[in-house]
Length: 315
Image (cartoon, rainbow, N blue to C red; front, side, top):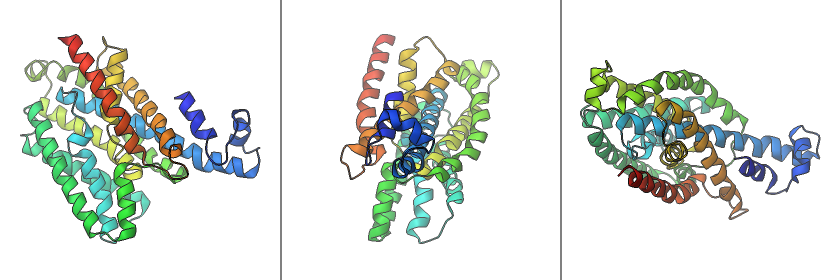
């Protein structure tokens, strides 16, 4: 994370040598370098850290609640619903203030998650929830494609980059917009973590220990929605971070539980997004590529490899 953060702050146009970076961060360097570092690169890096941490923690919550390592936001209709909630007003030519976009994303994510649970019988079977979620996600993505067909050329380019997940041109206002939602999600995440450990025992054992399984899964989905939707509103659906980060957390602490994995899933999520943002910004410079394309390109093979090793060891 440190190396990727240094690369993100130093590399680009103009290049800021590492020994001049503290001076640029404090505003004492030449005007251009200081402006680029403090107003463009630093908020982008902070947003990458926060977004990755939220997605990593949300991925672990969903996987533990449904007892399936493939239970990720992309396969449960949550990310697609949030993206649809933000993209629809843009296509329909409604002027929406930036402060309202997280609310629309939460509404869309809640709709996608609720459709999944409703069609799957409110979580009676984790496998049914996952399969139903994949179908709901496909339906919501089809709705997004319809929106893209309806959009004009300029809106189409904006929606396309947004749907791939992008940190381009993000500012401190975007970072600050996530603050109120994190104040809500943080305590809820702390309260949710012990229940996740009980849900891993299975529905019957969890019921015997006094946990109402359906309500617990609904609560876990609500926490995941509050973590994912504001990030999607600002950055778009940054793909598969919620799949890879929990796998890394389990890999480096195989004897742990949900409570001990949760902070590490957040840390690994931040690492994944910050590392992926370096090639997203520099690989095809001066053209920027969406960071979501790089998280999918690098994250899916690595996550599948970790998952295969974990299941092989379990056998």
